[in-house]
Amino acid sequence: MSTAPERTSTPQRIVIATRESRLALWQAEHVRDLLRELYPACQVELLGMTTRGDQILDRPLAKVGGKGLFVKELETALLDGSADIAVHSMKDVPMVMAREFALVAIGPREVPVDAFVSNRYGGLAEMPPGAVVGTSSLRRESQLHARHPYLAVTSLRGNLDTRLRKLDAGDYDAIILAAAGLTRLGLGERIRALLPPEESLPAAGQGALGIEALAARPEVAAWMAPLNDPATAACVRAERAVSRALAGSCEVPLGAYAQLRGDRLWLRGFVARPDGGRVARAELEGEAADPEALGLALAEALRRDGADEILASLEA
Image (cartoon, rainbow, N blue to C red; front, top):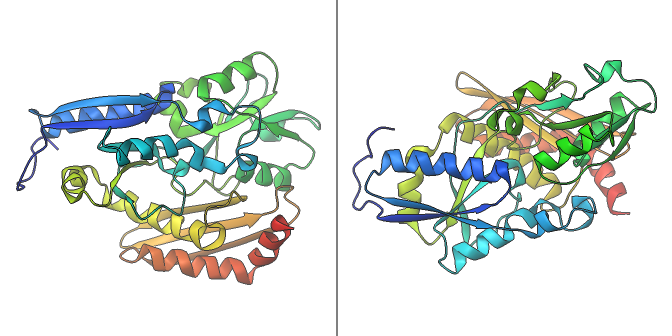
């Protein structure tokens, strides 16, 4: 990435829209630094914004509009020309995007799994019945209930620092967070255990950063192209295809995780009721060159294992 590829034009100024949480700013600053390396003469700036998802902290995301609440204000900045790109954690990007927007790059993936964080216990297996685990995710909640039904799982909202403060204040015996965020902020020492995908299957796109721009600005897509990591992009596209096919823009307990094996992808997924009482699981392997097709095939396999019935029960 030390030199920019030849193009018809190079950017003079790029404005990055970002949430103002510490993790979101780290992500935006990371992309800013990569762009400055690519385009030394370019002025790269951050536009910090507060989203509805940051403001509503007293209710679970699933009850107030889902993860799309974290991107709407950033997308408004793209539409009105205040910003050229927005940087997101890919797991926060809605599976169904408005046609005005496009994901123009997906960067290399950080550790994609969930992390167990506790001041009292070394792992979920050590926790006694009734111990309180905090999470903001229906996906994590359903897997905790399914595998550890004796634990008390309660809602945990707020940015990463806020969640750690609540743990340290004794509100929870343990919390489950994305390992990527802790690692990126230099808080890896807080991780007591990494939860393997077999125990807590990650969310679609977890650990990857995405860059969003207006679909009508191909020059921006060209500027961002060197930041795209094809291997990560293939995995994330397969994962998002599963979620899009089954859940669309809805918040449901669903996980999808792809791993590259040579020129093929190994894709796993599940759909569950929040209480973990019913879980549909499936896995497939397919060509990395057509990740969306693999994602759609896995969605069909999940339907055969009962995903439609689970989804219908969530709508009732």
